[in-house]
Amino acid sequence: MQKQIELLKEKLNLSNSSKEKIELLKELSKLYLIADDYGNTIILLQKGYALAHHIQDEESLIFFLNSLGTAYIQSGKISNALNFFQKIYETNKKDSLLYGIALSNLGGIYNLLGDCNESLKYHLKFLEEAKKENDKSKIAFALNNIGFVYEFLNDYDKALENFKKALELKEEIGNEELIASTANNVGRVYVEMGKHSIASEYLQKSLLISEQLNQKNVFANVLMSLGKIYKNEKDYRKALEYYLKSLKAYKDIGSKIGIVKVSNKIGRIYQKLEKLDKGIVFLENSLNLSKEIGSKSLEAKNLHDIAEIHAEKGDFEKAYEELKAYTKIKESFWEEKRAEELAKNLAGIESKDIMEKFDYYKNEFPKLQSQNEELEAKRGSLEYKNNFIHETLGIVVHNLRNPISAINWFSELTFKNYRNILGGTGREHLKIIQRNCKKMDDLLNDLLETIKIDNQNYQLPLREIDLVEFLKKTKEIFTGLARDKKIDFRLELPRQKIMVEANEEKLFEICENLISNSIKFTDDGGKISISLATDEDSVEIHFEDTGVGIPASKIPFLFDKFTQAGRKGIKGENSVGLGMSIVKRFVELHNGAIQVESQENKGTNFYILLPLFKN
Image (cartoon, rainbow, N blue to C red; front, side, top):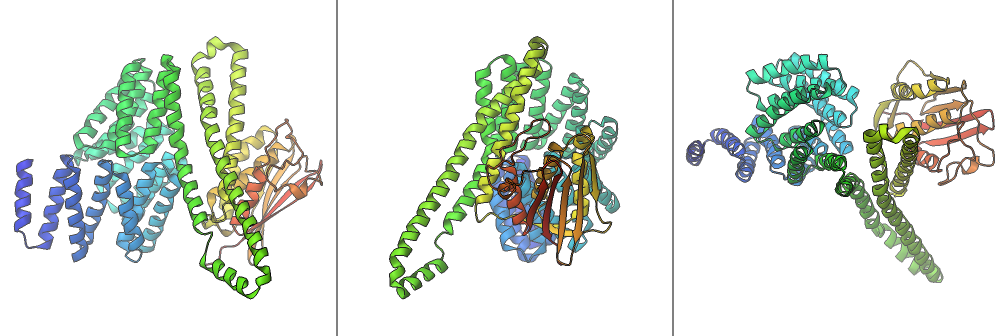
């Protein structure tokens, strides 16, 4: 390989043709990447990118940019990749090619970092751009990437929907290489859903094509997915055979991410085979490499799995230390975002406009100067206290989550491994612990949400959605709970679409809170309905139930923080009084309004008014 590199370098130095130089830079960068020489790989790719940009060679530009992303990530410089593509994204919004490449890569990088919301944001933007261009290849690529995010979130129905659409487009285009990779994605999701027969069909198709076309990365991925089938079927030795083949294939191509993922799976298989020390070796190798490449999501998974094996060995001290590190990483994303929002809030306190107005009134109305100063001092004191309270509350919540997570995790592990020894009373006690941990976790989540939305600079990213289709999907989620109480749960919706500009995640939280409360506070055999009514500019969502109702004295305070409605669920359920204040704030962030009407023992009506989407 070294002779080949020297020969290509000599040709590059002698060449006077930009086109020829670009092709030589491509070949050289590939060889250096195979040799794991990421420093030279990145230098050559940057030169190629600059040259391709100069002569406007679009095909080569795509190659160099995407290869740069791969090289940065494989070398463990994920932050470099993020900064590189963020810069391209911010400076090339009028260049559809560069803008699209940046969007796609940013989506992939954020998914690798475990920030699914940011990942989806960029992938959906890329899909939007691809649809504008009516470029089937790009649309398929975007759908594929969106599928990856939903797969990461364990939303396998949405993942499968996107992967299948991508596969249809790729078969229409006729690109065998892309068909192989996407068929593998479809098969892998079917494996996660437990549908092994249909999964095997897609995976064998992908294996055949990837072997014929020498697609080593796809080949390694398929072997890993086939190993998962045998693992699910509890044929652990066969699973280990496929995983070890996959590991060899990943090592051959130098894919550090692939090595991390399959090493984790091998470690878990050795755990199943009761070879715990061997399992820890593979998991620790996977952990160290995940730290090297900077993947927090993979690092967290390895820490969790190592903790479980230490607990199985009876070394609970080590297990607790690993679990603390795991919880710290899971919390880090929220901490970073909270710090960013706080910095923005503090940076905006002294705006030019405020200072100009202050000077004006100071000069024009000397008598008010002392009053102004007094008010400013009070305002500053209140702001300081408010920020201090929020900061302190955030720290308290953060410090509470570690022990609560540990208690819950160890109780689950004890229930799983010692359920036959515990007896009926012991098992019931563990279930009580788990239920109370869940209540505490829900409370902490509400507190975190409250801190976040109290920030005046907090804004929701909104997009156009069909409210009718959204409510149909939302109802499906709660149908089982309503059926368990024999509640007649109905939707009264128009046939035509009703478009609103909304944040789908937060709109779901609004509906989830109202629907779950209706189910909780409605007797067996009662009724719940959701209906829509529109006028020229707005749509009203009406939630109605025949539940226990809310006392009239409590209604004026219903949306205040830490205020309970003076009622318990039919089965004695209670609440901490944060849910409705969060609902109100989310509705307001949609530029909407919420009202309530209720009579005790007759039921409750909530009305949410949202503006219609205007083109």
